[in-house]
Amino acid sequence: MSLAAAASTSCRFLSPSTAARRRFLHHLLAAPAPPRPPQLRRCSPYHWMAQFWTEGSLEKNNALVEYLKQHGVVRTDKVAEVMETIDRALFVPEGFTPYIDSPMPIGYNATISAPHMHATCLELLKDHLQPGMHALDVGSGSGYLTACFAMMVGPEGRAVGIEHIPELVAASTENVERSAAAALLKDGSLSFHVSDGRLGWPDAAPYDAIHVGAAAPEIPRPLLEQLKPGGRMVIPVGTYSQDLQVIDKSADGSTSVRNDASVRYVPLTSRSAQLQDS
Image (tube, rainbow, N blue to C red; front, side, top):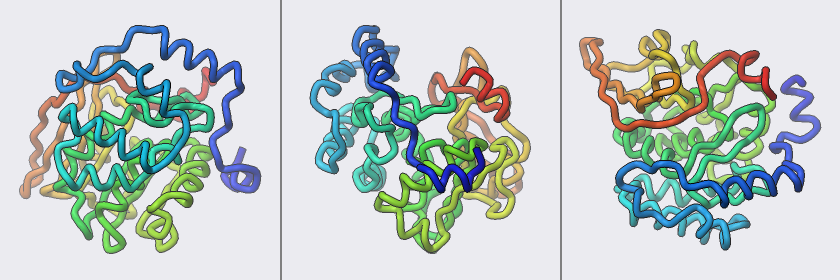
């Protein structure tokens, strides 16, 4: 389906069938919780939140942010404010519980990351998301994190989301149109594009902040080239074993790399490879 065709029908994510929702929730509630980052090990199990938080509201979204603050994931007022402003429920497919700390499928073998991963990446990038700065979100998926970036850099900055699935670009655009970032999408400071994320988006480069929402076997060279001196990239790297890497580029163009945490992301791959099991 073309982008225009997707937009002319419905840009919203396809709602899962009742049976699919039941299968997903059964798996979510029955399976043991996956290993958590150290600061989250004392968090309540997923099903505790799922019992109550089944519909969207800003009050419940704020409660999720408070939950992440209590467990040391959201550490700054700046990150708390943007996560409270952008309601996660607008970016999660209908029929799923938006406020549990778990990734959610959004179709086309893609996911929206768990809230604690969004918070982690925002905390790592916050100093590179000042008003007027440029940010790139590779594999923008639902559009949630791109919207957060746009709110942080403001109308004088630029936030770009790139995604190689046209239907997801159409859906993320509709999601943002219903969010607090709608005005930034309208004025062009926030934009989404259909493109291979491994190639970046040179038109708005260089970027102060680059986030990659899928795991690459190695850091893509075009993304390093589009990172501004003084800028920072956060990217999961690896295949089966993955690390969330933080790359800082110095004024002379040299880079330093450190591992922040062990993670598990979907792979950063071609459109055809991503869709082959859809």
